[in-house]
Length: 193
Image (cartoon, rainbow, N blue to C red; front, top):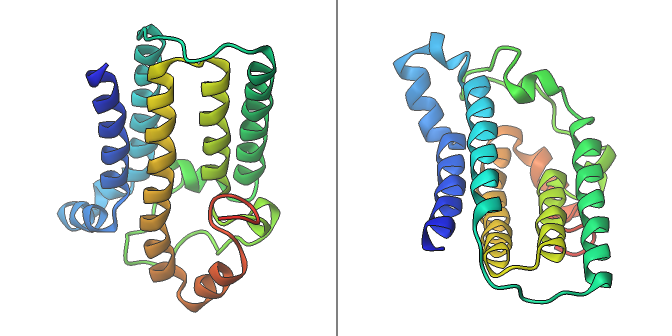
């Protein structure tokens, strides 16, 4: 089970490293031509590794923690809410730019996307993270095993760490507009945190 936990920690750490401005700047300096495809390569590799880890996670066996139909039903509701929130959040921005299908600006260039403050972003600054939080809890409630609890805790911890680093980039990118937005809208959990 240690391998399982280290794999998820490694995935989230690698995800943050690849999203870091410093690494992007180094890659852009090395090859601006390659950097045009960086976001696309990043998106595809993140999805592939996530699929591999999900498959690996499905095969891990550990003790069951609890088993109640009401908790399982709540888990399915949380999974549905998480998926819905993510779809609603994705609809707020240009998916082609997000996935890297359109050219990616160099890290020191102006973003191709404006600061989004409507849709789900009216209620929470990181709706994708909120969706993942709901889904991580939903997975735990539907599959209440010890290793799933570990996965959920690692994922939730990463969401708060990842949002901290992302906030730094967003302040750097959007300046006072983002600071003002940040003062009005909660970070990960609408109306709470």
